[in-house]
Length: 179
Image 1 (cartoon, rainbow, N blue to C red):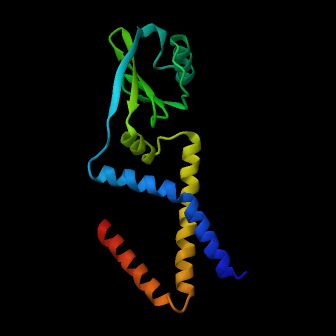
Image 2 (image 1 turned 90 degrees about the horizontal axis):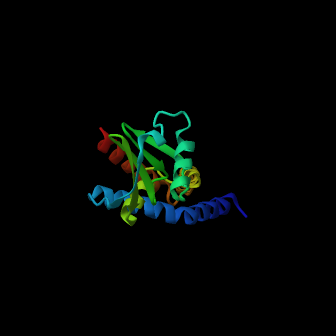
């Protein structure tokens, strides 16, 4: 098997593996550009006394997990995001929760994003730890696909000039769009 055949197969297999990921990233990005961002249904689940949870704790993740167990809420929480007087559980691409201080109470909300909002959240990197790893792997895979494809196009006498011309046009369009 020649190096060219090996590179073509590698290009094909890596591209085929990442097609679903690239498709949904393109779909969610396109929907966002069109102003379609989906909706999130929010409902209040509980109100607890503010003294039951210290928002300034160094172990806020553990405290929220313990509070949720006491309340019968079973959900995986990777991390907590803090915004002023509110906490939000992560990952947020699926059902997640918000805790907001209102006077002497903490209101606990359940958020249920629709499929479009879930795709937007994943597009922005709010997935699970495995999904974030998959995203990083996809970046590496996409770079391999691009460089192998460009290299194969430039290596062939039949496609060298066309590939070079299209590559230069691509660079020009990119630079014109960011300047």
